[in-house]
Length: 91
View 1 (cartoon, rainbow, N blue to C red):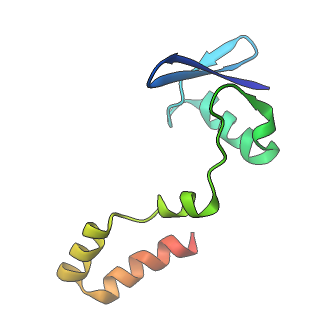
View 2 (cartoon, helix red, strand yellow):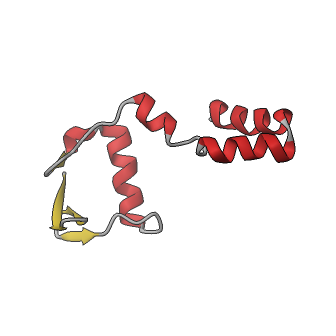
């Protein structure tokens, strides 16, 4: 079981047993937390504001901003842009 503890308006730590860690990509404990939540669901987490994002919300984060996409089309052409977008869609 994990617990999210808010330590300031913009920061929090995650507690697992007697261990606390920050949610950073290079933290091995955080990686385990992500894997556990992916496998077991959000029910293993308690704390404020545990929000399950929708599929659409998660998907939109994968795409570059529209300005960058238009820049890619202008500089590299539609074919190069399609290749980049296809890689995101395939993921």
